[in-house]
Image (cartoon, rainbow, N blue to C red):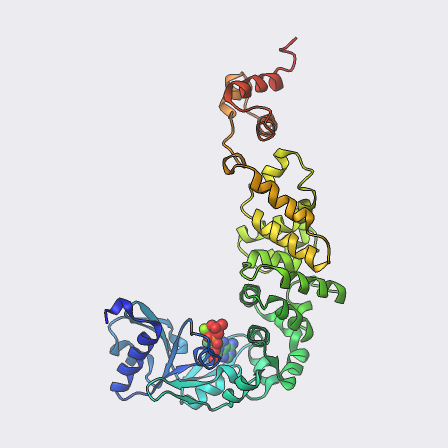
Length: 412
Ligand code: ATP
Ligand code: MG
């Protein structure tokens, strides 16, 4: 087989084979074993080994140290990079975040430092055998997310695990074990100590899946929701409606659309503030706020003049806007007639006419003797509206129209 045809499994088997030839233990670990037992093809395979990082680096020609302090090395095999981590225990959690120190240890200890039993499994791909120190297989079969060890202690060590529990439960349709869930309820407020970037990353992973509605419901049930961003206030009616809205989104809705659906009853300003607080990118902040601010305009789309409709439809997020409006209508059991009319109106416009290049520019205004200044934009906007409304369709008409705006008396 040519190296570039290697699947991720072939690559991970290659890493395991080399480590074992040199007398080391090497296993698949964590999420990939869980996914395999659930019948999902793994999207990445992590290898865990007793070989320390310098040995891993010596055994393979191409490696990259990613978390040396955590003993993690990326190993290149064919077209893949396989994350290869030395069995470790995490020490010295400070303030509920990442461990300050690790020690290299046994496979069993490495299983016990992991967050949930379903994530604590190893697999020997050569003997095709699952190695289970934490009763993870039982919980996968029962559909339960359960902290490994004492849940209070585990969530106190790393508060982000509370959101991870929700993420895994909603993604797989699992329940959270009652003892684990009640520990989250007790400690939920501590999620505020986690950096907003990491909270956003977890939220994003939940919102991009079709289980997004279930995620929000669970986030609320375990008491995390009021602590995810400043001013996160939810009545139970509002929560119900937002869950229904999330459930009504297209399955493949992206993070921006889902976040807009999550916040869609907020004002434009509040939406922007939340997206900022979650450290979204500038484009994401702008788009989420645009979606929320313009959602209701879809209802008027049929009655708008051509220029207003085309300017709305020209936005890069217009299809997301239609999807958001549709989902919000479905969630409120409102008719979809306006949404469908907007879609039909869009389809009736030839693509080149939605955002055609303007027929005149600032240079034309200068040629007409106007000083560049704040009036320029207003005049050009007015002209562009006339163009979008079909009142002018070529440059001669545009220049005549401009003359009329710039020198309103010229016709007399
Ligand atoms: P996904 O499919 O979302 O990537 P995953 O289980 O692979 O799921 P990762 O975040 O990639 O999740 O982490 C890989 C493994 O590392 C987990 O399965 C778990 O065993 C362990 N792990 C990750 N984060 C933590 C944490 N905060 N606390 C303890 N163990 C963790
Ligand atoms: Mg993973």
